[in-house]
Length: 277
Image (cartoon, rainbow, N blue to C red; front, side):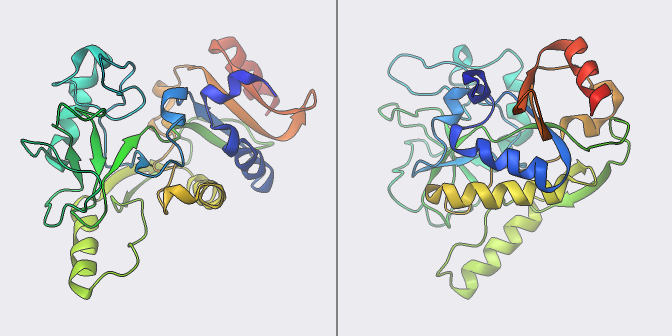
């Protein structure tokens, strides 16, 4: 198996993508996730980035702080983030509470009014990073990159970016309600999910493929505690203008040259792949 595949998906999740492509007779193209994010998959105290969190993951560590692969504030660590990180950060800043002295990530932050907390304790190795707390209902889980799908399209039909995409509103939470909630906690949980619902563009296969992948991944990752790794529609649902021929890992319903996946580099590789789909 090509080692380059694991810049896109975790080695433990590769077979889930192959199975999804075969089960649904489709092609699944995945954008590069990055090994920094993937190292946190399945670890206790971490979770995949949900659709309501638009802020980007850091690309570098700084000094004593472990930031790469985690959602990080560009206001605190501009040198660890991509140049456009501030724009994306501002889209989700209203969802993040910033306790002046940080927080103890071993404790449940009861009473938090937002889904996320920002770690402001400079002694913590994730200083400047965002953790999911679901309005104080969960012990903090630092947020790493999820799987960002580029396209899903059925085998044997002409490929058309956003040809059948529809806009839908999904609940912000990508987690099932934690066990053992009181009635009051459950009401708060459901109200919070509704309040931060996310508008998304999805194709005809989006929900089925995402559900299949998330169920398979959850079975292999008990540390995820129900958090999902596929949380929003595909990039190309934005329309033909979004077809920017990014480097992607393509999973196929039938093997080519004895393999079920290949990395596509650039426009020529994309176009050749689509012609054979």
